[in-house]
Image (spheres, rainbow, N blue to C red):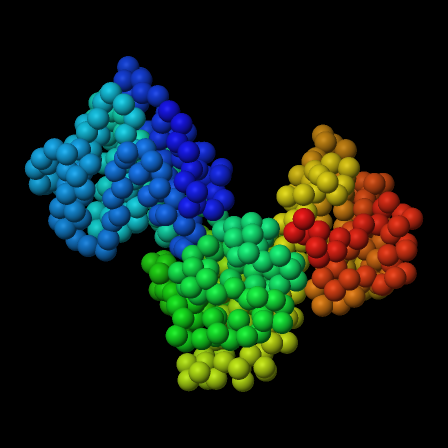
Length: 490
């Protein structure tokens, strides 16, 4: 059975294909055919929209849990199951009874059952994951069932723990799907933006979260680059729009975060350019060991990411994953009182430069790394196996050279690691020969450290363009690559 994706769903082709395959997988009752899938992702990414559509197309059951007591949740679940099966369902005593009845609802055909916002249920009934595990195991009601059970949730720390370590459901899921924000090119198409400069600026504010376009700003898209400032003022900085408080809610919704003030300070430190453990600790006035737990929690909640230094094993830096949080911490948080009384224009006038340096610039670097990872096979001799940032020590000058985009080839046995590219990304500065010379110096230092740099391409990603001299040099040297802004979106 083939389930076609409805036209109302933009993108998400891979996600739809995975869900459709899971929902229609053939039944073999002799082997025990009930299957478990886990779908997760941060809020506003369209998980529920996607799952409701696949459930409707497959003729399945969709149950959206709410914050409720166990007794109320059981009653609501029984009502949902009765509507799906069109049979009378006795009130459930507990989740042992409810889960068993759900798996027995069909035994001769695949039947998709989606339980959305599963963390609400597991919080009120901590034994529920163990009950599901038992019913999927030998002797359980799932052994002769056609149910394809999908558990979905946005609390990343909870959903990530479902299948981790010694968790009851570890090893039981045949589908693990994380619904990510749209990538930068897909996001630009979704917003209907064709100007690459405008696309970067908008993405630096709201990222690739699909819900922000229609539900949060009612389809308000900046018409041109000249409309960007006015768009920021009438949407993100406007207290009458849901987008205004969204960054705060993203933090408040995570149950693992119990001291919002501390976590906001950690995020503010990262947004201000403090990316190491020591730098973050110094910014907020704590010792390094005192912020290890907050950093781990934020990472578990998928709000920050720990990115390793490609050339210094054991060293890493932290990056905020959600652009709207970076925008809030860098631009909005310190001026919140003014914004609440509708002084957005004055605030934006005095913080716009902060946005360009602390938000747009670093965001452009991250987009260049993402672009290189996705499209590196068209840029270099082969597709990179790893892309990240790197720091090269320069002993002669007693300094360090920061490399914005490092592309490495796959490791081949004991051979020296090949560097496909060293890249510099500049958003608001015209790139010239001095940027190229820094990359060349780093390449020579890395050669001395044992890296294979024979075919290394020096790549310059220009948000504001390149000098004529650099353009002429690149035209005659295939080891110099210029990537203009438009290519990131081609």
